[in-house]
Amino acid sequence: MKNRQHYIDWIRVIAFGLLIFYHSGMFFVSWGWHVKNNIIANDFKIWMGFINPWRLSLLFFISGVGVSFAMKSRTGLQFIGERTKRLLLPLVFGMLVIVPPQIYFERLQTHAFSGSYAAFYASVFQFVPYPEGSFSWHHLWFVAYLWVYSIIAIPIFIWLRKSQIFRFESKESKANFLEIILFFLPLSATYWLLKQHWPITHNLTADWYNFVLSFLLFIYGYIIGNQLVVWDSLEKYRIYFIAIAIFLIGLSKSYDALFGAIPEDGIGILIFNGILKMLFIWCTILGICGFAKYYLNFENRFVKYANQAVYPFYILHQTITVTIGFYIADWQMGVIPKFAILVVGTFGFSFLIYHFIIRPFKPIRLLFGVK
Image (cartoon, one colour):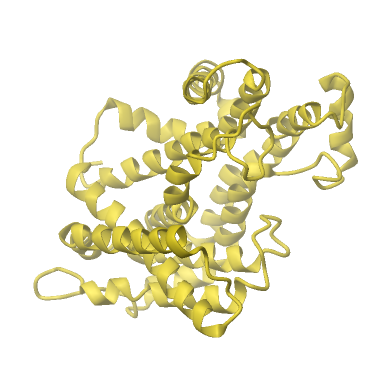
């Protein structure tokens, strides 16, 4: 614990916590989601549009960082066993217990079903995939992908641990700025080769653009994870990374506002967008990590507690948000008060369930992936 990099815990807690705000926002915008407010407030798209490109990329990256530390003290088989217990078991539990209420409330709101939850729940065990059926992993797709990545990446992890190909060293103990930033190029290549042919579905079997992109970021997290020389560089160049990210997103949003989005029907636009978007995502991740190392390299009671709670919060949060959203959708109330109710309610109920139902009992901890 003396040598623990506490800023990594902070990034993990903040990244997962951000999802509650984002998914609460999904209740109000026209983007497809499970339940909707009676009044659509597309102004929310402004702040959500800044977060959307990198929020999940950051999660996969920081998950890879965690793996880099876990693999230091585990063999490949030990790691597979630990990942299966902490990812696959909560995934199966979540698909059978946590996710079905989301489908139920969605169908109640769209009048596709009108019976009791007990009458609906039997349809889960027909194992017909959503949306035709009631069997889905919904937001837990992240857990499914993370488990698959952890299994298929074992040979890569072992090779990288033995190889020196991605070891950053310099006389000043500062990794080269250009070396780090050029990691965006394989991300751009993924965009060029797969984006137009494989729209994001989260279904694992026909989601190759999202699958490869997230896998690369997961591997990047592993590569960078326990190399303190790289984290020193992220801290040193944090302002440059964030400045590049702000410039790129500002350029993109300003152009779209003035002239409209350019369709990617030409190779030039595709290449340009691949560079612009992937460089933005990568620099945002690097900048966030750099600022976290500079300002958040400390531990307190909050982050120690939250670091244990964040995974159960993730498993629980969207079901709680959908449930609250269903019941407040038709309230004659402003958008901002409803948003506050969703955010506070989701955090509050997640905390109560975690603190009083999950945390004290070992069998339930196991179902939610808590050590």
